[in-house]
Structures are given as structure tokens and as C-alpha cells.
Image 1 (spheres, helix red, strand yellow):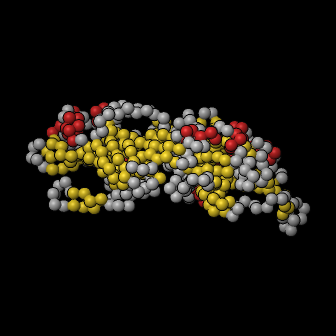
Image 2 (image 1 turned 60 degrees about the vertical axis):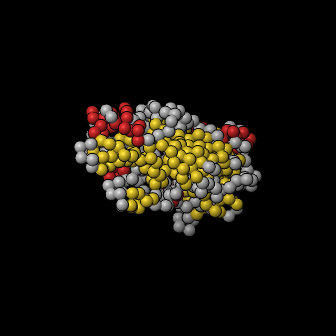
Image 3 (image 1 turned 90 degrees about the vertical axis):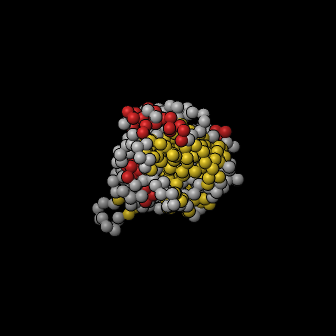
Amino acid sequence: MNKSLCYFTIVVLMTLYACEDPTTIGSGLLEEEEISLNSQSDFDISSTTFQPDPIPVYIRNSSNFTIFNIGKYTDPIFGEVSSKAVLRVEYNFNLDIPNLSSIYIDSVVLAIAYDSTGGYGNKDILHDIKVFEASEFPITDTILSNLSLPVIETPLGASTRKFAPKDSVTIQDYLADTVFRKAAPQLRISLDTSRFLSLFSDFESVNTSAELVGKLKGFVISSDPQGNGLMGLNMGTTTSDATSGLNGLYIYYRTKSNNTRTVAKLILSLQKYNLPTIGFQNSPFGSALGDAEIGKERLFVQGLGGPNVKLRFDDINELKGKVINHAELEIAAEALNGDDKTLYPYANQLILSYQKDNSFITISDITDLSSPGIAIEAGFGGTLLSRSGTPNGTYKMVVTKAIKAMLNGQVPNNELIVSPLLSAQRPGRVVLYGAKHPQYPIKLKVAYTNP
């Protein structure tokens, strides 16, 4: 099942009328005609936590997936989470391709930039990182998060280090023994040279990336952290890595003809993705999945393919025939005992979609605003903000077009799905108050005009 996620930045400038009772305006401006502007916020809403089908972690011809996570942690609320990163390398045709069968290989290093906005859980722990060679690598338009990818059992390389997205690294210049230079923060792992000596021994006829992949299928990077946490990696774009980017597989070698030192760089291909594992169903609150009674008061949303929330607007059809001027949805966050939102931050951006014809479609309040190119939180909202009356903050979202789509019959069952933005890449999560909570119920506020 394909799940469409929103990666656009958008804006719309709107204001919701704050009044709760019908109000007549314009009588001082129009002598013969009055416009009746009304607002309503007492809609009947049903809410349930559910586990979505496996999400896409790779989509062909999409450059949206750049953030990757390795490691694992046990969240006291959401249970165990782990993630591996998968990648392939290809030739960099901006540089000359050496005859890899005619070189002496001194060392091979896999280098990947840190994601300075990434990481999750305890960021001050050591990660025992391993790089494995994939024995198979699927070639398909879409790869889902439940993929099982076989690897060669013996790791190609290993390293123990902290997640240090702000710390530069010192690298010895391979071409000069006495020259050292500072480089941008990055994960660098030395790989088994003997494997590449064997691999490249018959590379004289290998001149394309397709032939390269036939011999070197790909890599899987995992971490067994000494604590609870994920390390964030930014694998960037193939275009930038081919020019000035640092990501790549660096082969430090000498020529057989004159023993000259040099380096070749294989860049990361577009075929790279996270492989997350979510254990919410085995968490202390796993019983909330599919339970409508629990969903009345408490809901759970999690990235990396974790649980989502389904909202059904049971009496929205009462607005049929009305002119919808503006609509906002408000959902308050809850803090449970034992939760540590400093260690496990709440999802910083929620989005809304609906399911139709076996696809998840992001609401047009989001997608129609891609053209202005202004931040999503300005036009749609969906960020957690402090508001009076809610102790842990509230997510407020513009849903004007979504409500109109419901009234036009375009949204099946009048149901919307609440999920985190960049769910395939970000691990953030949040507990929400349900639609029937006695103090902080989910609120839909609609301003409309009678025709």
C-alpha cells in the first residue's frame, strides 16, 4: 500500500473567527442584505489509534529521503525502536574512473555526513557501528519498511564512537604524510581492504554503475548503542556528492605503473533507505491499537512507521449546503507518567491525509500550498505550540479544504489520518488527548456562511 507523505513547504494566511455563537455582521454596511457568519465547535468526532501498513522507505525518482537513522532504544511509552541504514554506491562520472584491476589498494573508507537535526534518545552514548555487505539488493520502484535484507555475516568494517554532528574531524592527507586537515563532521569507517582487493581484481571490464552493482550489491549500517539512542545520518543527494559533497566510498590506492598515490571516490546512489523496526504493539500501551474506548481519551502517533491516529467526523454532513469559510482542528498533547520529552521529543510536525483507493492522500490544505514555497507551519500549522488551557501544548491545523472535500464526498467515511511529517525518516512521537477526553477533547472549529 502506497502512503503519500507531504514534503512541501507551504503557506496560507487565514484567521478563524473565535466566536462560538452565530453572529450577524455587515448590517451597518449593507442596507438590504445581511451576511450571516456562523461558527460551530461541538462536532461529534471519533478517534482511534491504529498501526498502518508498512510505509515506503524508498520511492524511485524521489530525492525526498535524505535523513537516516542507526541504533536502537527502548521508549518507556512507545516501546522498542531500532533502525538500520541501507545504501549503494555508483561511479562518479565527474571524475576519471580508474582501472580498478591495475591498482594497489591501501585503504577503503566509507564516509557519511551526520544529520545535525537528527538523532533521538540519548545523544551522549557510544555506538558500536558495523558495516555489512548486502548479499542481495531489491530493485523495485517502491521499498517498504518491512523488507528483510540478507547480508554477509562477517562485517566489512566496525567503529565505536559518539554521535558528534557538531565536531569536525581531522583527516590525514593521503597524498602527503605530514599534512593534516580539518573536515566537516562525519562518520568515517574503514572497511576490509582484502575484500576490495579481491573484488577489484577483475574490474578491468567493469565500466558502468550497473556492472559495479553486480559485484558490490550494497551496504547495511547498523549500531548496537551502549545505551538508548539513534544516530542521525544525512546521505544527501547524489548530485552534491558527485561535486562537493563528502558522502561516498573512498578508495585510497597507488598505481602499479609508477606507484603514484591517489584516491577514487564512489558516490552514494539514490537507492538508499532506512529499515526501521517498531515495537509499539509490545509496549505498555500497545493495547490502544484498534481500541475505540481507549481512543476516546488517549491516542498515540509515532514516526518511522509507528502508530497513527484515525479521526472520523460523524456529523459533519450537518454542514452540507453551507459555505465553509474556514476550519481548524485542535489536538492537545498529553504527558504520561514516566515520559521524558527531553530525551524523547514530541513530534514537531503533524500532517493529515485520508485513505482512498488503497492510497493515502495528503489533504489539499497542505498540497495546494506548495507553490508559495513558504513554511508548512505558517499555512497549515501542525506544530506543537503552547496555548492557554492545555498543559502540554496543542497542535492546531487548518482543514478548510478537507472539510469541503468531506461535504463533497471526496473523503471516504469522513475520516482523516494523523501522522508525523517525514514519517519514514523521523522517529518523533507524541501522546494525544482523544476526541472524548473530559478536559481536553479534540476540537473542530468551523466558520461558515448560510447561502
